[in-house]
Length: 238
Image 1: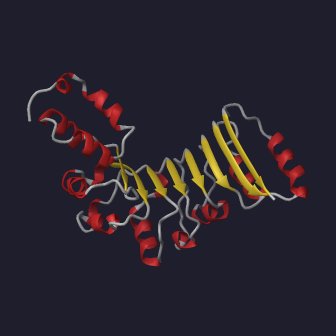
Image 2: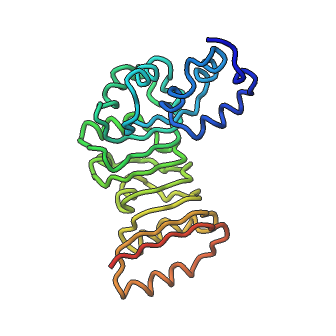
């Protein structure tokens, strides 16, 4: 390794670049250029680890296990991968260090859940610390434990079933700025937006809605003031 023009760039600029990349993309693009950048990689603590990606090469995965501590993982995406990366990763880390600083969790639609896997998720995730939570899979096994979490810090929520999230959370999220959800009922829609309407910046509503529900829906939407809203997506089925 030798000196390059990269050595003249400030650490903050690399952090800004890294914020747009997943963990394996950072390793793939920047690791082994020189010692200066290697040190930046080793000290960065806002990694997004994507277990669903099909583009992680074996050498990159081995380096992640070797170099990146679970304490440095800020975001985590769980999903199906042909190389069974999740189990391989768990076999390479110390159980006592599982993701203490995790703030973003994404469960994609490819994930295959079972009771053991669901309990594992519950054992490593502190839902009350999350600021972003997305679940594309409606498998109720994920919610096998009736959680006491309040999601008190949650700002971004994207989900495929409002009723399943209500089973997971003991209280209404109160600080949402982004809410995109399939709502199982008008009552569920009211439940989520009642305390969040004034600070919501992005709202996506998908639900099955019969003709006699339209008046309820429009009346509900007119009830609230949308002071911060800049994006609104609507998909009424039926």
